[in-house]
Length: 150
Image (cartoon, rainbow, N blue to C red; front, side, top):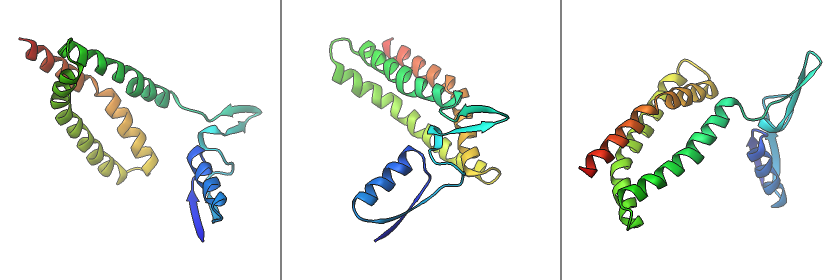
């Protein structure tokens, strides 16, 4: 059986290796000259550069996976200090509509930006705009939680 894997980053190489191990005939397609995606290096003007995670990627990782999760847990405990499950239920009821709205705005923005930019550039622009505007939902959630305490 034949398969095509597009992109030679960590995921692309891993997928190609798994398919090859299952006896597939694999074609790996990469738009750059070198394999590796964010794990590759390139040379320019006699210098070697790592094409690893960008500042935006590092910030996204910190904010989305470290700060937000830690902050969410502290809010859940703050909502109901004696019953984590009840605090989680209240938190989800308050945060879920805003999360769904944020996802909808993300997809709509991506759709419209994709008409003017390449898909990768559109994703980066939406991420940057989203990170820049995260303060509004954060403040709104804090307000709703404060209102709930009264």
